[in-house]
Each structure stands twice: as structure tokens, then as C-alpha cells.
Image 1 (cartoon, rainbow, N blue to C red):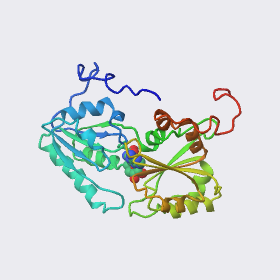
Image 2 (cartoon, rainbow, N blue to C red):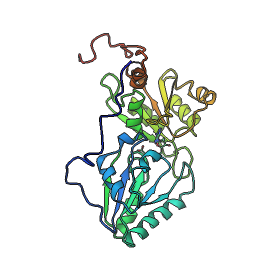
Image 3 (spheres, rainbow, N blue to C red):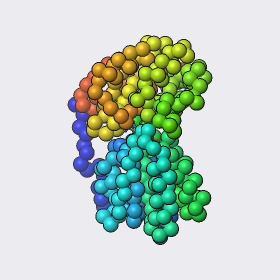
Image 4 (tube, protein in one colour):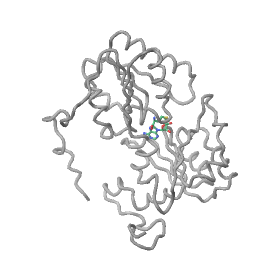
Length: 293
Ligand code: SAH
């Protein structure tokens, strides 16, 4: 059993490492990713922003422990909006950001993961620019990369994939994205990372099977990734629907389709921290050292 040594590693004697940290000026909006959950996955730019903002508008997926790092004086506005709700509200949020900036506030718009990955950050930023509001964009760790890493799944691996496709399981209407060409997706990428895919997992899995993906292909579902409530379901394309029904797992979930899911058998580092042995040191059956090409 390894020691985690959580106590002494970081402390408050140095508020932020020396750097030319930008100042959040009145009338500006910083559009910032908060990462997938674990507060330690926040960027230093995000922390710098949290400490300066007068107003913080945050999403449902921003971990409450991160909000605890906001300045005591900051006004916190919850803009919770979970999958498939009317998009009119999106416009309200964007216009509220404009109003706050025009009122001379130092505004932080905090979104889960990365603001420009399936987060409508692009729309909000565009509205701000259209209204003449100056912006800064602070990227974050997206759930489809960082969340899978916490489950011990590398989104790329030389033995598995030369490309990865990020997919949304919802479109603007809240339905399965009808615009997606599942045949092309299936043919084009060995590894698929699906955001917002829980609700429509049955038609999505069927579309991939119809497009020729094997029913035995490994799939992982990671819910509440990087948080203390993280859960991982390992299944296959053919069994995912039944397995999810049996489980009591609920969104937010990242779904990964592809052989890289097998790497979890050797890289489930969270289980290893709690004392478990890796299940299989060579899950892809390379039969030679991992670094040998
Ligand atoms: N901008 C975000 C994605 C927003 S869309 C990002 O870059 O991560 C919301 C979807 O993201 C959720 O439905 C889910 O699919 C995924 N997601 C976000 N946080 C997650 C988490 N902690 N665990 C699992 N999935 C997550």
C-alpha cells in the first residue's frame, strides 16, 4: 500500500507561482474551463481568475470544491443547465454576461471541462465579442481526455489508434445527432469518445454495430470522472445497453469505444493506489516491452 502523502506537498506560503499573471479588468469576461471535477485539475490561470472575479457564473458540472476557491467577495451565479433543456436559456446566459461586463464587473464564466469542447463556449464568446466585450479564453482539461485518464484509459496508444473522434450524443434539439455520419465515424477512427451519450446509448450503439463495429469491441462508461464518486463500467458494444440498464449509473458520463479501454487492465492507477494489483500487465497482447516498437 502506497502512502498518499497529501498533507505537506502544497501549502499557502506562495499564493501562486511567480509568473506574469494577467489581471482581470473591470468590463472583461474570462471564459474559463474548470476541468472535469478534481479541483487539482484546474489550471493556474483558472485559479488566478477565481481569486479576482467580482462575479462568477458557473455551470452544473463545476465541482463545488472549486467554487470554494473563489474570493469571499465574489457573487456566485448558478447557470445550471443539464442535457436537452431549452436552448433559449443559453442566450440569456450570454446576454447576462454582456450586461455584467457593461456594468463594469470583472466577470468569470466558469464551465466544466474545456469551454470550447461541447460546452457552447464558442457561442458565448462570440456573443461577447459581438457586443464589444473584451474576453480571455482559459482552456481546461476536457472530460473526454482527463476523465478517461482517471479511469486508466489513454485516448491514444500506438498499438490502438492514430486518431480519436470526439462525439456528442445530443444535438441542439436534444435528440441523437442525426447529422452524424455513423458509417464514416465508424470507419474513420479506432477510438471514439462520446460526450452526453447516456440518454441515447441504444441508438448510438446500434448505429455503430450497423456500421460494422464488432459487438465484442471494448467500451467503458465513466461517470462523475475524476470526482470521489467516479464509477467505471467495462462492457462491450453488444452488451452496453443491458449492462447500463442493470447498473444504477447516471450522467455525466464519458463513453469510450475502442481497444484502448483494455489498457485499464494495466493502468487503473486509482485502484493500484488503493492497493490492488494490475489485472493484466499486457492487455493488448503485445508480448514485448511496452516501449519496444
Ligand atoms: N466542456 C466539457 C463538456 C461539456 S458537455 C468538457 O470539455 O469536458 C457535458 C458532458 O461532458 C457530460 O454530459 C459528459 O458527457 C461530459 N462530462 C463532463 N464532466 C464529466 C465528468 N466529470 N465525468 C464524466 N463525464 C463528464
